Image (cartoon, rainbow, N blue to C red; front, top):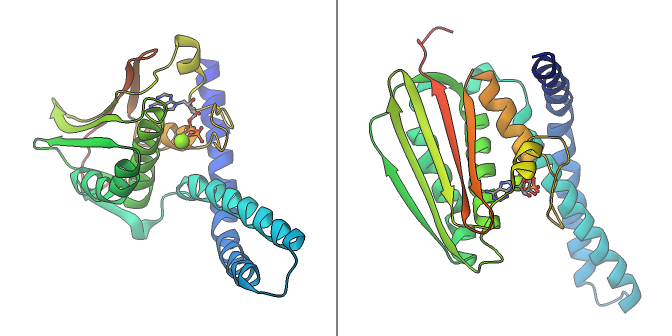
Length: 231
Ligand code: ADP
Ligand code: MG
């Protein structure tokens, strides 16, 4: 169990670091990329210069990606804390992800039954769900589509969130790497999405079960204990 404690400490360090860095970095990234886009439209630059500008824009997009995967690592902020069921968050983030799903020919099924309430940070849960939905959709890229099934329910004193995709799936070894910082098999991946997911669920004393079959798809089953309103 020493491993688990070490892992937990590591997550805390990462989360504090991210909290202080992400907000300050976002604005300059947006401003710089805005000016570069203007420059790119100018008729006075050579094709070679245009190439440099485009490369810079690409790199800025990559930096932006890293920040957005990191952002909600931030320590829970009291302003974001709610006592609610996660249905609102699951539905809201489903709507955010719909255009991305449509582009990738992914059909999204959403099922829910009553869920219990617990205290959580709204932004963190939203980011966490987006990361999971995105991974599911990205896993169906090479298969040129599929189905993402999102289910929210309750069982005993727990909130159950299940996210299933019909994507490429993972081997046992690949599953064991999930949540390690910078582990990614994608060309443009950050390898920070699942770290954020594990860290968030960990803070809520929840549990993540991964079931996957190579070539068939993956299910993430998240169990979070319901809590009382005053943590
Ligand atoms: P990224 O998405 O930037 O690669 P993540 O931390 O979100 O980083 O995911 C890490 C890796 O875990 C992915 O690159 C992928 O190999 C694997 N993975 C995560 N979710 C799934 C999924 N639903 N199906 C298949 N592989 C997945
Ligand atoms: Mg990801």
